[in-house]
Length: 80
Image (tube, rainbow, N blue to C red; front, side, top):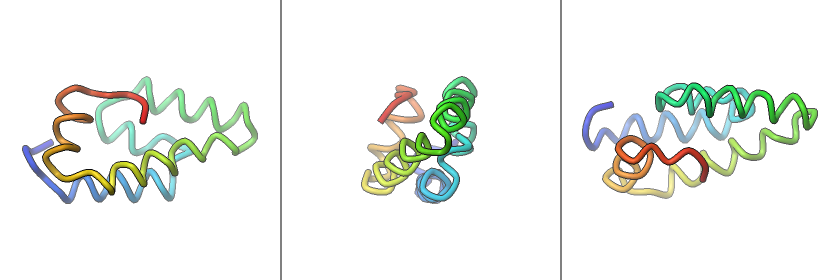
């Protein structure tokens, strides 16, 4: 992901909100394990686990581009 690329922050945030239960936003961030875990959580909870992706998407959209890049791309924070 390019340094300070706000469009990726928006893309990941929107996908987290819309398709968070499928973990697609985590796959885009390069966190395959996190993506798979979100799928498993969603299946085990009969869909209620998708709330995790919804919350993550909202959090991503509230961060500045620099903050998002530092926390989720460079430091690779996996949860919230």
